[in-house]
Structure formats: structure tokens, C-alpha cells
Length: 445
Image (cartoon, rainbow, N blue to C red; front, side):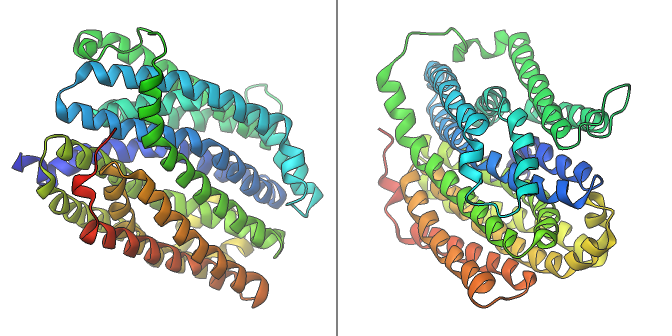
């Protein structure tokens, strides 16, 4: 087992997950990169629209992460048929969830956003995007279940293959549909939404075909036999997944509120923040990969009964996560305009965003440590504790943001500095639980 704690082994599990983490992030970020060359209104509206979509998307993402934790535990225990059972039941549930969120995102979006968004122009552009983008829940959720399976069994290279295919597809169709090439009309923000849906169709088809081609290798898992519903299996998956779903939902909802607060500062401030958000999401990609690897490896270790190795694993993953972040941070500090120019060609926005980029670069180093600690807590199976830590941290973060932006009328740079408060609080809470909590005796039921 010692080899499973080496930096090489951790990296072997993590790097395909890092590429896989680009999937949904890349879609949202690439939308911004193209819309940043349309106009400031489209750039600002995409901030609200994509954040709203991501908020609705995270319950499915959280459910799939709970599935990943269970699959990793069963894999560590050698219970292969249970893995297929979890996978199949998750596919059932997640499509029902997708239907509910589709209805909300397509038919109730005006009622939800109208009281929150001050600018009528931004509201209308955001609704245009979401009218198309909401179809992505069905296929996007299915793709997350496949990623949960491959991550849970630590066979993660297929995730990297799918991500590369998605990146190429999304880039090509964004270029064609947003600007109107190859005889297509220029669709602007609506074209970005359609390109994202096409990308998710391609991803799911790839996963289905790839899994079918490797049927002999995966036959012991009994995937996709479409069994009868097992209520006990749902209860088990829901017990692990529900706190993660709520954690992600609350976390992204608070970040959505963060952008609504910035929208009240002005359209230009919102456009600048959308560019910063896109760079932020890129900086988070390697960290999310290491976080997902931590979930899998911690759960697998506990499944083997090797609780005493968990903290050593977390410590080594923290080192890799920090080094990976430091490389990106140095690039931002040396040539800050390089990354910003990818998302917009408007010089005033680039110049105004540089000080904020410095702040974000510093906060991401804190996040590099905090996320691994939190992922370690989730990997123990005590996802309710992760949810409690997240709620406490977000309360502190939202309070600090409100004071900076609304009460004290601070600059946009100081508003973004609240990220330090969030990450430091989250990391400290997770460390205290891992150091002093009773996670070693926690049982999945």
C-alpha cells in the first residue's frame, strides 16, 4: 500500500481528474472568452446567466460526488457488483433531478432573476442564454455520473480523453454560432448556449461508446443493466450525497449573491468580475482535480481499513496542490495582462482587472490547502460535517462581502479580497475536524 501514498501515485490519479475538471469549467470559461469579444453587455450578462446555471447544476454535481465516494469505498472493499448498483441508481435519480431543474431554468427564470437583477438589458440577455442552456441539465448530469464512476475506480484516463474532445467541440461551435460562420447566423449569447449543449451531447456519446467497447474489463461492475429500483440503495446514496448537494448549492448560491452585489456596483464592475471569475475558475481546475483525487483515495484507504495513512495522504496531496497553484500564480504576477486578454479585448477592463487578479492569485494559494483538507473530510464519508463547515464559512464570507461592497463602499479590489476570509475559514475548520474529530469511527450506512 505504501506505493499508493507516493507523490507519483497521487499525481497519476489526479492529473486525469484535473483534465476532467476542465469539462464544465471549460464550457463556461470559453463562453466568456468568446462573448468578451461581442460587447460589454454580453460579457456582463453571461456572468449572471452562467452563474445561475452553475447554481442549478451543482445539486447534480454534488450527487455524483457522493456517488464517487461510495464507488471508491466499494472498490477498496472489493464489492464490484455494488458499484454498478450505485451507478445505475444514480443515473435514474439524476435524470429526474435534471427534469425539475430544466423546468426551473427554462420556464421560471424570469420570475427568479427579475427581482435580483437591476439592469433590464442584462436580464433579457441572461434569459436568452438560459432558454437554450437549460437543455444541458439532462446530458450534463449523465456525464457527471460517468466521471464519478471512472474517478471512483481510479481509472481516470478516460476522463481526460473526454475533456479534450469536449474542449475541441466547444471551441469550434462557439466560434461558428456566436459570430456566425460557415453560413450560420451570428447568434451571440444564444449561440454560446447552443454550443455548450452540443458539447455535452458529444461527451455523453463518447462515455457510452467507450464504456461499451470495454465491456469485458468492466463486466464485474454490472453497469447499465437497468435493474429494478432498490429503495435501500437510494437511501444509502442520498445519505452520502445530500449534504454534498446542499453544500455545493449553498456555496454557489452565495457566489451568485456575490455577483448580484457586484451588479449593484455597476455594469462595468460586473463585466470586470466576470473576466476575473473566468480566470479564477481556470486557477481552480488543478485544485478541483486534486480534491477529487483526495475524495477517492481517502475513501479507498478507509475501505481497506488503513485509517492511519489518511493524514499522510492528505499532507502529500496538499504539497502537490500548492505547487500546481504556485505555477499559475507566478504566471499571473509576471504577465497579468496575458490571461486577461484571453477573455476580453477591451483595454479599460483589462487595466481595471489587474489589481484584482493579484488579489485572486494570492487567495488561490490559500484555497490550494483548504480544498484538500475539506475533500479529506468528505472522503471520510461524513459529508454532513463538510456541509456544516461550508455553511459557517459562507456566513462569514457573505457578511464580509456585504460590508465591503454595500456598507463601506469599498473598491472592487477590496470586495474580491473577501476570498481570503472564505478560504482561510474553510481550511481551518476542516483541519480542526481532521485533527480532533471522530472521523475514524464513522460508518457508511
